[in-house]
Amino acid sequence: SQELEQSPQSLIIQEGKNLTINCRSSKTLYALHWYKQKYGEGLIFLMMLQKGGEEKNHEKITAKLDEKKQQSSLYITASQPSHTGIYLCGADAQ
Image (cartoon, rainbow, N blue to C red; front, side, top):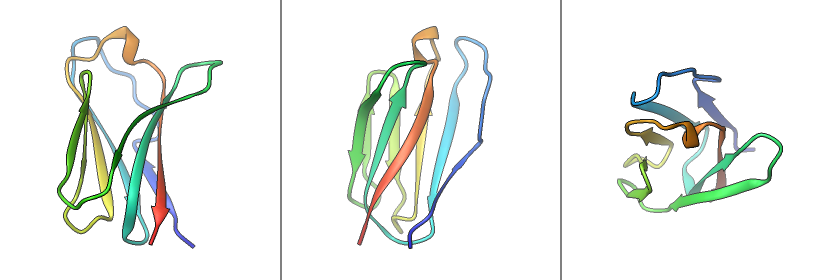
């Protein structure tokens, strides 16, 4: 079975700072999805990455899938209060 591990588990940062969240897979990813959840609300789909080296943007959020397709990083530039929430990665196994 495929396992996904996100790091760091939690993060508190100052407004205007940049941050990175990593999602590592135990197997090669067919597709990786990033979601955001605000407290008490449902999941919001942010983006899906399928190709090794692919990079996508959503507002001030950028995500990249590494060449070997076993890790993705989510970058938030100049964080704002609206970025507060839970970020989750999900994957389709090959």
